[in-house]
Image (tube, rainbow, N blue to C red; front, side, top):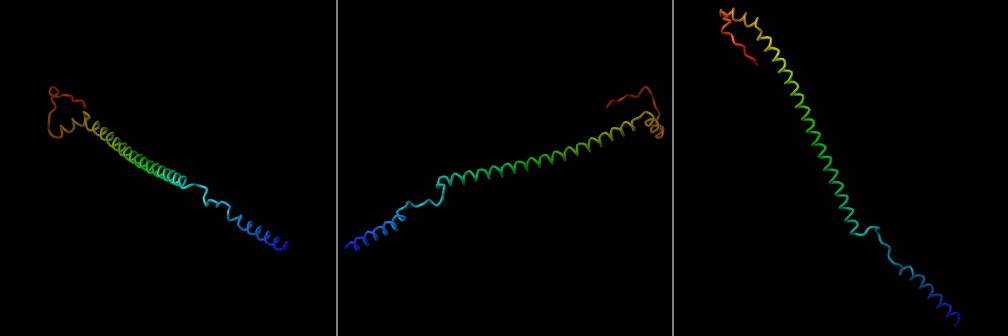
Length: 119
């Protein structure tokens, strides 16, 4: 009987040791809860959106600056053309040239009828 009793005790101890790990609480697969995962996703999406927004604004600023440079270049060219034309006007409006052209056309110069015009 003693050996029977000892066997029963041994079998019960083995069953307890086999059942003990089964009763241990299940480990979570993830460190983050579903709510935290959603918050992380929303935060990541906002960061991506912000970065895209900043890059698009920088591209727009670059385009505007490029247009400004082109316009400034065309303004400088037009100012050069204007100054060249002003030089031509001053050369063509000299008294000697006007006198030569009038004599060539057979006109006479009456100093009393000459009026000066300022630009």
